[in-house]
Length: 205
Image (cartoon, rainbow, N blue to C red; front, top):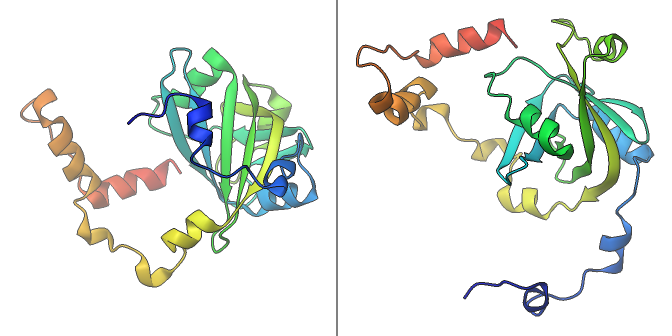
């Protein structure tokens, strides 16, 4: 049976604990700021005006997401596949959710807010790294921030190196793309090997 109302949904669950409600802050505090400064990885969640959803991983050296103040974050837009799904969605809705991870730490940090795209020279320079000054920056205005409990990462045992998957158990990215797109590509299309793809990635990290 489908659950179609909030009332029927709530009959399946106990009320949220008081601390689960009170932990949500309208701005970044010292702990959230420290968490972001240590994080090399964040997932950006966005939606289009038509309701299509997207979740995009972003990575960099720890602290690549810059905290300007308790309500403002800057995220450099690094080279990718040029689909620009997240950027399109920000232009259409101006809404963004972020999930920060720290390797080895089971708690995560969730941040929700509004976002704009800026080509401000000053803000682009703030996000400069050893490779480049970004073409544009995502400026996030924080509306909510809270630490998420460790249960999901504990269940997954995500950081346990003995459970890491050997890359060889999956076909190469090129092989998977060949299988997925072959019927839509020219018959003589040549797909990259995994090694060729990694070498290309390294040039645009």
